Length: 149
Image 1 (spheres, helix red, strand yellow):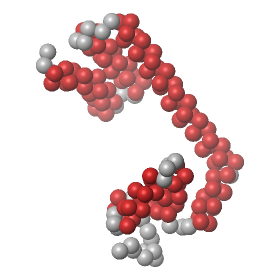
Image 2: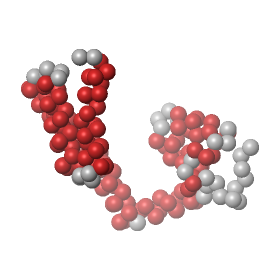
Image 3: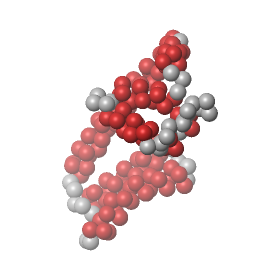
Image 4: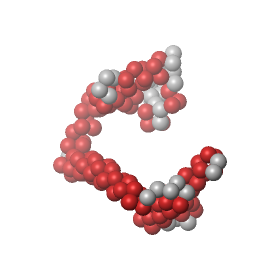
């Protein structure tokens, strides 16, 4: 089979998931098994994969999904714990104590997130060239803040 046709066939499970969830408004709990079944059938029939290999990759996918779900669950647990205990207000108050400018707050967060400060370099580059339009409206300076030139 031509490589272009194989590429189109490889995209079919993704297309099915998109059509079912966006077009037919199916929940992911119904659409994703259909997309998985399509991918499994294509893997066995078109690419001649053994069924055991398809099942092994399915189990590997479940393991990866569990890892991602644990990370998301942990992040939500921390967020709701901070919110319920009132510590989120303390964090917000601390940020407002440093600066009210949302751009500077974003830079502080990026410094904290990036181990080697690549985020800081990128954001300072954008600010130095007055690319403020790339930031969301809540990050743009207020009218009282002097514009960078």
